[in-house]
Image (cartoon, rainbow, N blue to C red; front, side):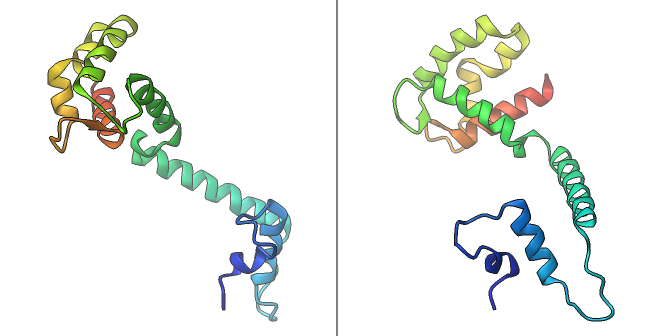
Length: 145
């Protein structure tokens, strides 16, 4: 039998709105004598607890797993690229260094720019910096700052 939430998506839109989710949760409970069907308020309390737990876990995991941080770094990465390639070339990196040096303090500029920084960021040593390499390197620089 398909998973409960898949069955709840009766029109196959690929997601559930809140009321569909609540209905699926209520329908999934055994209606036997030993089980009490939760009310919407109880479902909201569980959702709030789950959200709090999830946010605490994301915080514990660090900024690498934060979609907000990754989104900002993606914008920076795309601004640094001079072509539509999926990676930064050494010349892209050096051109971006000029922007970083004017926008950031000297300590961050020293750690995040220059030829040495490019070689540190190029984890797989292919002469280019892919997005995941850029994120990992950038976050390691920011952790020290």
